[in-house]
Amino acid sequence: MFRRLLQLLNREQKSKSVAKSRLQLILVQDRTGIDEEIMESLQIELTEVLSKYFILEREQVEVELEREQDSMALVANIPVLGTKVRHPVEA
Amino acid sequence: MGKVIVVTSGKGGVGKSTSTANLGTALAVLGKKVAVVDADVGLRNLDVIMGLESRVVYTSMDVLEGVCELEQALVKDRRTKDLYLLAASQKNNKSDIQPEQMKKLCLELKETHDYVLVDSPAGIEQGFQNAAAGADDALVVTTPEVAAVRDADRIIGLLQNMAINNLVLIINRLSPEMVKTGDMMEPTDIIDILSIDLIGVIPEDKEIVVSTNRGMPTTYNHKSDAGQAYKRIAQRLEGEDIPIPEFKSGGFAGWVGKLFKG
Image 1 (tube, chains in turn blue, yellow):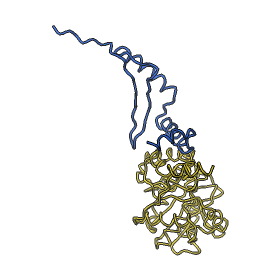
Image 2 (cartoon, one colour; image 1 turned 60 degrees about the vertical axis):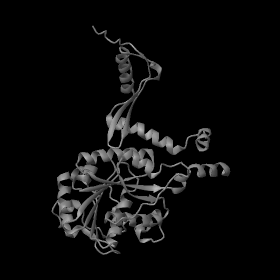
Image 3 (cartoon, chains in turn orange, cyan; image 1 turned 135 degrees about the vertical axis):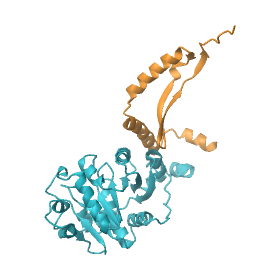
Image 4 (tube, helix red, strand yellow; image 1 turned 90 degrees about the vertical axis):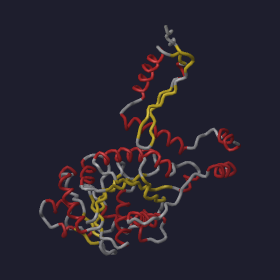
C-alpha cells in the first residue's frame, strides 16, 4: 500500500515502461495492419449500434486490441447507464 | 544427421554475426562438429569476426557454380577442432542465390556436421529468405530496444510462416545496471511481448569489441561475461539445464536508492 503510494508520487514513468507500452501498441498495428484510424471508426460504429439498445456513457467508451500469448482479443469497455429495450409484455 | 539453425534478427547491428561466431565456437569447444555459414552475400563479415579472412579461398557461390567441392570451400578454424566456416561471396548479390540452392547446401552440410549455423543478413528480403530456407530451427537475436524488438517480432512472424516453429530468443547487449534502474526493458518484458522462449541473455561487454579487433571469438576469454554467456547458450542448445541468470529492475529498494543518490 505504502509502496503503491510512493509509486504514484513518483510521477515520471520509468523509460522501460514507456518502451514496453509503446512496443505493445506498435506491434498490434504491425501484426494486424489495423491502425488508429480504423480503431476509431470501429469505435464510432460500435457505439452507434449499441446505442439502439442501451443508454451509453459515450465519452467513456474504450475499444482496444490486446494480445495475450498467441491470441489477440478485442477488448471493449462500454459503460451502460440504462437500457432502451423494454421487456415485451406477455399476453 | 545434425541440424540447421538460422541466426537472424530483422534489424541490423544487434549481434547476429557475433552470436553466430561465438555459439559456433562454443559448440565446437563442447566437442561438436560445427559449420558456420555466412549468408550475407556481398557484405560478408563472419570470416573477419572469426579471424579467418586470410584463409578464405572459395565461397558458397563457388560451390553452387561447381567451381569447387563443398569440402574444399570449408575453411578450417585455427584454434578449435571441428569448426568450419563457409564464406559468402563478396562479388555477388543476394539475388544470385536462390532459396532452393541454400536449402541444398544446408542439407549437405548437416549430413556431416552436428550443427550448421547460418548467419542471416539484416532485413526481410531475399538474403533472409535464403538464409532461412534450409533451417530446421531459428535463433532470434534482439537487443532491449524498441526498434530491435519490433523487428524481431516481424522476423518471428515470417519464420513461423516458413514453418520454422522451434524459435528461441537471445537478448544481446543487456546492461544490468540500466535494467536495475528501470531504464532498460528486462528479459521478462521482452518475452511477454514476443511470446517465444528465451535461451540466453548476453550482457553488454566491452570485450566483444576487443575480441572482434583480434578476430578471436569472446568465448575463448574466460573472464568475459559475454563470452561465458555464449558458452551457457551452447550448453542449453545441447540440452543441458542451466538456469538463465535473472536481470530485474530494483523495484522499491532501487527506487529509494536512486532517490537518495539524487
